[in-house]
Length: 233
Image (cartoon, rainbow, N blue to C red):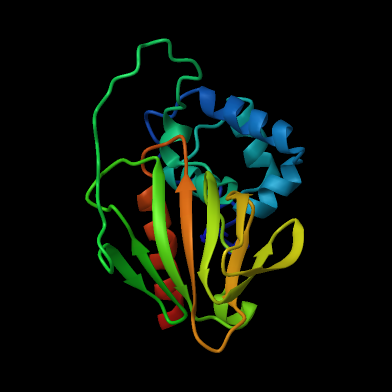
């Protein structure tokens, strides 16, 4: 679903912008730990984010406070929420759970809808803010990966269930897989992925995205809006 590839043309304009004032020292450690977890080299991260290896090394070692633009490139390139980069979440919380009793109902054809040329996205239960599980109905009209555009990625994980028709799932590290009505798949959303329809009529899928951060819905909407803007260009 989402897009984050920053053009290499934006590669390192020497950080001439004013550095953000509240960039925590934990950013370098977060970047280094994420590289180690995925087995990425600095060159890999540079390719994903459009930031030079020398700048990345300086950020990791606390020698450079990146501009907000650089933080945004890191966020999109690595599939990490900006909020987590600027204020990494506490890893352990011993406070008791608080029951908030939230509930939301979406009737048939209700929800916040976003339309692109080849997809219709309907966000269900959109009256509840700061959800960490985002349910989305998607009508898939794209018939080729070219129509789908670039494969997208975003922070978190997602579960996909095919409601109608047949779709092909393309993903970064796997061969394309065919899914029919009733089939489902669970995947790491930081892996680039895309869906196309294999039937004459549009296919329909239900996606449930999850993230440890509360602003996932906004991130997903921004990805779709970027796609709409790209279609108009």
